[in-house]
Amino acid sequence: MVMDRVPVVDLRDYSEGQGERRAKFVRVLGEGLEKFGFVSVVGHRVDEQLLARAYAVATETFALPTENKRRYETPEDGRQRGYTSFGIEHAKYTTVPDLKEFWHVGRELPAEHPQRQSGVVPANRFPEEVPAFRTTMLELFSGIEAFSLQLFDAIGEYLGQPPAFFREMVRDSNTLLRVIHYPDLGPDAPEGAVRSAAHEDINLLTVLPAATQPGLELMTRDGEWMPIDTPPNAMVCDTGDMMALLTANQLPATTHRVVNPPGGRDGGRYSMPVFLHPNPEYVITPMKPGFAAPVKTRDFLFQRLREIGLTK
Figure 1: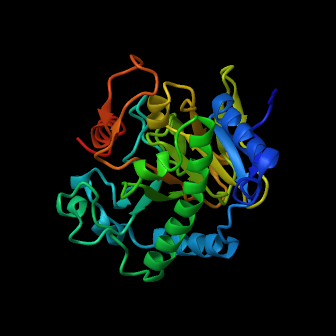
Figure 2 (figure 1 turned 90 degrees about the horizontal axis):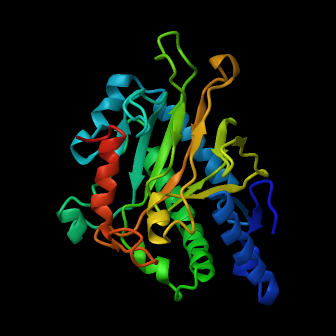
């Protein structure tokens, strides 16, 4: 199959389809991830009104005074939850900070859960000033995760893995919803800074609802930058470094970036990617023996958090 653009698949072909219809979904999904590291998915059942509410709540939250937002910053856990200030994170290939601020939301584990007790999966930090943030973002997290589990089933099928292979891997995991605000560029922006510098994601799979402004680009296997254009209400999905390690690069992590708007101003951009991780205690073992040494998920994560400036 020859592809010259990121493929679009309809999840209903998998969840409701049978025979060749279902098999084609698995094939196009897998081949798209192999060629581009990205696919667009429609038919995901995540409500458009929920997404609109989430963006409205995000806008209200990031409009809070900086000193209010910084009350929810947690550098002690690698900023895995709560607020991260503008100019903190950078791509691992550069020390120039990205032009963004963001808020991390994870799953709500019971206080007595061993991974809550140990701090491996931190507690959420929600802004008291915007009560709707908690309920809205947890609802969005739940909806995107439910969709993602179906996508994982299809990816596992493409890779020839047993049913529930990925579902078991991500049970009680440190999956994150990152609510991002990219403000208009100010006159004091560092030279060479962009909204999100070229990088690969850390995790297994990223699921990204449509952002409020364009700007996302991927690097093709030929080394060319290609804007990612999607149908309305599509989810953009890409594989990260953990998936590349697990599959011995059969499903590689693709370099991508968010470019600055023309003239530096578009009123601000918001996006809400969900980063799906294995359970922190899961040992990522490449499917191809000898490809690389196995590594525990939480060790892999903290190494990358150090590389991008979120922890020391």
